[in-house]
Every structure is written in C-alpha cells, then in structure tokens.
Length: 162
Image (cartoon, rainbow, N blue to C red):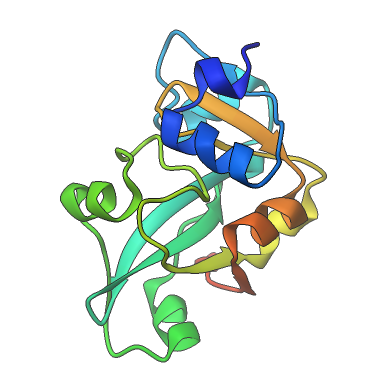
C-alpha cells in the first residue's frame, strides 16, 4: 500500500491534503478501470465500488456517484435536477470537467466544481472504494464521508430491475 502522495493522481492528492484527509491509497499493477476489475483486485463486493460518472444535464456537466453493481437511470437524474435532457458525457468532456480520464475519475478533487448526485444505495455499506485519480489506484472511505466531501446530494437515481 502506498501513501496518497506516491500513488494517487497529484490533483487528487492535493484535494485530499486540502481537505485534511489522510486515506490509504492502493495501487495495482493492472488497471482497475471498471467496477468489476476494481472489486476483484480489492476483494470487495461490486456494490462497494463507487463509480464517478459524468453526465450532461441541459448542457451542464453533472457528476453521479453510483455503486458498481448498478446503472444510472438518466430519467431519474433528469427528474432530480429538473432538467430537460440528460445524456452521458463523452471522454473529452469528462477530462475537461474533472481533469481525469474515464476509469480513474475520483468522487472529488475535480478541475471544475459541478453538481453532484450520490445514489442513496451507497450508504448501505460501512466502507466504499473509489478511484484515486488513475485507473490503477483506489481508496476506501465511509460512504457518508465520501458524499460529504464530494458535496453531493443524496438521490435515488439507479435503474430498477425490470
């Protein structure tokens, strides 16, 4: 296990320091770009992985924090935000908004402050794991703390089983 200064993306390490947080950052030789890869590498449940996903709501970027076992229901996001249209952001907008590449986007420490929604199901775990700014790094945190540091609003925005 490495420290945030040596393993995390420098922007994310700076965000942690700015918040006065010291969290253990785990680094893996193989990418943990997907939630399934991260869960396997960590040895946790898929639902303990936090996906940090960027969408566009009426043209403005929005971050949605979702557990790794679920999918975002864009209609629920649209309704929650009172937006006309919501769609998934492309890789360029993700990098422009967050400063990170898809697969390594952390829940906070982004280049641009955005609206953040966190799916309420994240709170059912004692600990969740999120990307630390690269596809090779993750960190653990209590979900309530993660939601607070991300400045997120809790919402029910996951797809329901058919």
